[in-house]
Length: 327
Image (cartoon, rainbow, N blue to C red; front, top):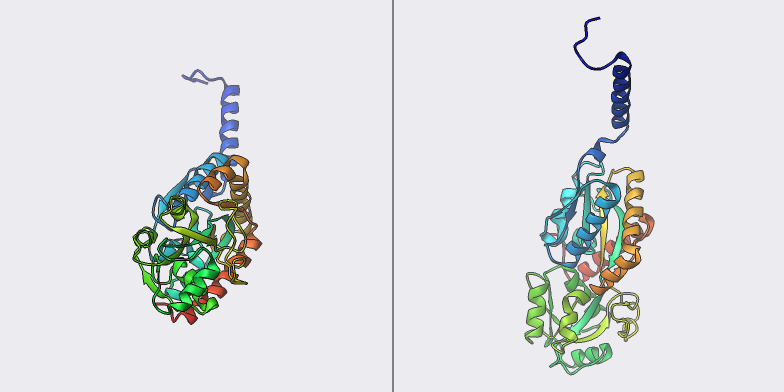
């Protein structure tokens, strides 16, 4: 046989065998694992949802050896991002990182997806504790004093929010519904604007995240009365909940969580839940999150699905009472 190469027949057999083995291995890898994973973040860069999502994306990339690319799609209370993921292929290549606003949206926005079926809850990653704050000119230092003062001045007090139908709006709407207060809602285009006017004294009160208000109430520009969640938060251990402070049963838990397209396999959803929980509950990560005013959770899928469903039902009732409906 005339062969002008430098390989022996035995070497060619070995190369052929290795080539076959590599192709067999590649054939067993799902197509989705060969492509980057896209994490769609429901809010603009720089906020708590964005920061938390990007940390998780980076850690997932390191853990899985697969690129996880963060992509912000803000707007319409997070519904733009949610719709993008709800309509994406359920192949594990698209993840939604969003806030608890996603549980409000079905009650205030006409959606192009089914909130119960087209998104699969993966894990509640962190709680983002909220706090009720007032301008220092308001002569109250507790929730009970605010209620008494507000009832002495019906329709004279204004409260701000990041927009009509936002989490801030409905948290204060729930508070007024449960206490019988008559306060006027002033919606703004975003949390920053709503807090700026509160600091300026143009409105009396608001509910916002610890992250967005702590610098204000620790320097005396605002006064914090109580946290709004069901439990006290390590971020503000000395502050009572609103329920403890005089409104039994009141709770508004703001959270950041991850979702997948509704028909994504249960096996992949469990893999992601376990990975994200491991990431946020790692001791150093917990410290980093707490420094930002966030409480690490890393819930199971079942726990998150139950919380998501309960929140949708709760906010639907609050929205109806407040006269809101999907536009």
